[in-house]
Image (cartoon, rainbow, N blue to C red; front, side, top):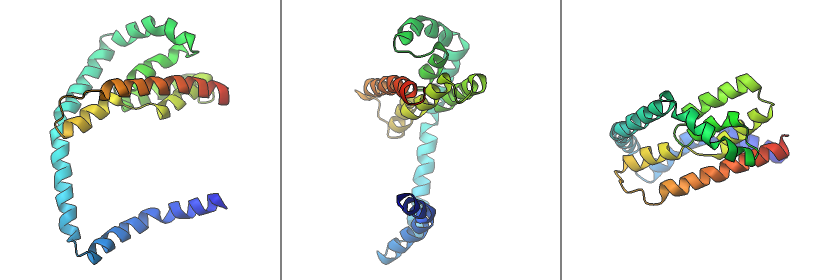
Length: 178
């Protein structure tokens, strides 16, 4: 019963929102089209403003991978990750995830193709992808879009959350998925 209700809500949620929001604005006497175009203009301005931050981050990621620093860091951290039961093959994805979601997804796809989605490595990589965040990407885009230069505790807090998600992914995948 619950699944049917959620399925019905999911099926009609987007059309109801697409129709309901303009109707709500009409009854509130808001110029809906003008508000929409103003919002789109602000979105475009924001996108243009964050381009330098994105380019800088993507170049840094490319240099990090091309220089071999990724492999060196993986070799250094391998004894530590083996203590929590994380296979060394997953470590490059764990290191890439705070930097780039696309880069981490590429590494995860390679792991799934190599070891299979039902392997322990595939399980850990999949859970890790869903339980961690692209911390540096988020900071670059969101903080950059509003011109915040002093991130204060955002990066350490994000990295601590990523570490917690990473460790939880290893344990959850091993306990529930084998």
